[in-house]
Length: 140
Image 1 (cartoon, rainbow, N blue to C red):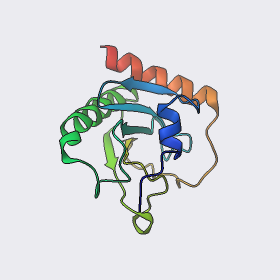
Image 2 (cartoon, rainbow, N blue to C red):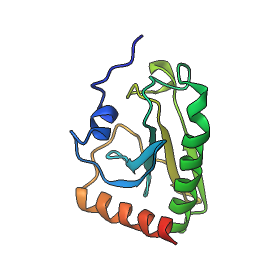
Image 3 (cartoon, helix red, strand yellow):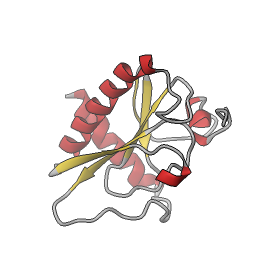
């Protein structure tokens, strides 16, 4: 299947849809997931279009994974998390719902399960506050 230039992440990168960005460089952007599975759930999205890992140009992985690691460290610190989960899905059967390669960075806490990703949208004020915590950790 071909890449859809009008997927929601492509629109976010073009600033056609607002987001709570926490980081951006030449390789990727990182922003808060509007339906977080846990406090601080952040998405890292490469700027080069691809549906998922299966059709991505391998040359993008170095830059994108550097951003995933940077955001994961900052999110763990920002929320004083016990750990951090990195998730990535390929095709609908695996759980992929937006067909632009992306990585979920989710701070994890002992004894607290993940919420379903199909839940309600988080309040903008909460997303904004969580984004600010991650930006502050990135600045240290």
